[in-house]
Image (tube, rainbow, N blue to C red; front, side, top):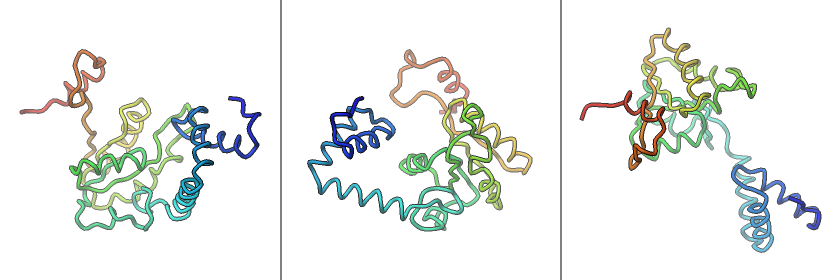
Amino acid sequence: MNFLSYPRPLADLITALSRLPGIGPKTAGRLAFYLLQEPEAAEALAQSIRAAKEEIRQCSLCCNFTDSDPCALCQSDQRDHSLLCVVEQPRDVAALEKTGEYKGLYHVLHGTLSPMEGIGPDQLRIKELLGRLEGVKEVVMAVNPTVEGETTALYLSRLLKPMGILVTRIAHGLPVGGDLEYADEVTIARALEGRRQL
């Protein structure tokens, strides 16, 4: 989009906003104009971004985003410290926590293996994972069912199994409310593989 007719600071703001995931140039323009018309909202947003940048860091144990180190989940004596769930991103921890079903600890990789993008084991938090396995009996792979996610799960499984740790994978299949006729073959196959007794 051509921002030549805008003053330089406004064009820069639109450009910066359009770099955010899911924000195209038109939405970025609407947001920029809103922020200029609502100075209190703009100031609150700026303060929130500044505070998050200054106060949020990675937990030294699980690598999740936190404002205390170690994070509240790692410190909790209400969690099962023998159970560790490996996820791709911090937002995945939030999604799993919303269910209220998982009671173990987490480890955030901050990505998946992707040789095409130059992301190998050294770019992920795998070394940190291997350093915190004392007392862990089971590692649950909760990475996304993508090619990269499956590659990462397999790689980690090959590292962990020789240590005598049970490595499991979250089930894949049809979502609640989903229709068989709209599901692809891989999803249906995974659903059949993950079937359980009623």
